[in-house]
Length: 427
Image (cartoon, rainbow, N blue to C red; front, side, top):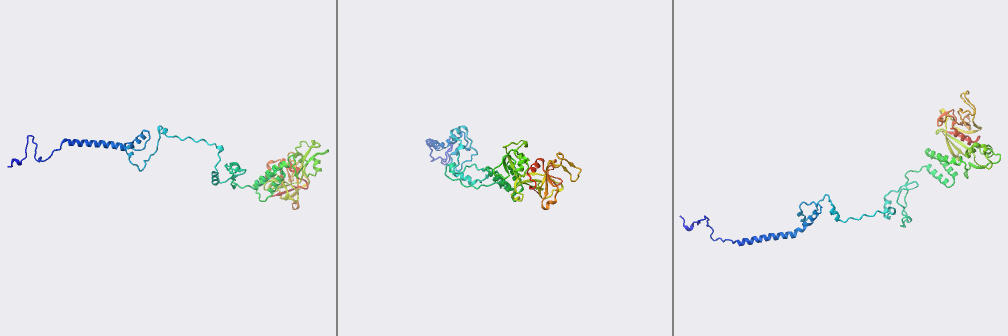
């Protein structure tokens, strides 16, 4: 049994007092002081935080309020140091923000008529762009750098013209002839073209061009009404009392038919010429060279013995003998061999006959008889004549003679001289 002093006291409230001996109780005032201090510390920390960090958030709020999205989800993170800027896919500026930014003034439209490139710019363009040149001028729109045009006192740099295509021999000959014509020397121009045709290096395409140009020139020089100064082929004559065109041709020793005087002077009625009238005369001798390969007759003028000096006049299309029967050789126009409106008998069938002025005569209105020279004297009965079959020109349809169209044979008849003019037939 324990002593009373050794057992715990049990009070009326059943509260045990064992182990409470010697323990001091804390006054309530102390807890109150600590509570007030803690509250003050929290409030003070709040104001310190607000003072230190709140201003850094204001620009973010201001930017967002202005309508600009910065791509930042948490506005507080804007106050933290950022080492890499956020990626902004597209900055969309609305009207209020755009009005706050100054707008640049538009530049005035330059006066293109007064634009002159600076010297360095001109040099750069000349160094980078290839120089090209066409006939008659340059394609480069940049003006030359001369003191006169640009006022810089610098001379234009030399450029090398580049031709895009070679110039043919025909083009060079025609250019030279044109310079002679511009200088008032059409006869010299004719000689240039004739020499070009005689050039053995000239190709056939160039010859076609030369013939066309020379024909046009001679249509004026020879077959036009005005004589050209210094032309040995033509001259002017004043009609005297008792003259007729046939007498003029004979007395002047022209070697050409009197109808040629009528042709070149445009005389409608040969019997109605008047005293004192000036007419143009054409003097022979003319020659013909027939190319069987090309079905072409080329007319020349010059001394019979010197073919190399002949002057080309013009060309005509011809028809030839069937089965290649037109002979190759050198011929001369027979004395008394030129006939107008001749009668004709078919040598293969004597029953086929045509009288003078018969419109059905196959040889037409003019006949120029030929006689072979040297070894070619064996060829008899051949001639140059017209045809009533124009479609036969350019073909082999005759009995061996050379055919021409009616107007062409009329001119050949007028210019060839009996006993002097040569007719050379070549392959």
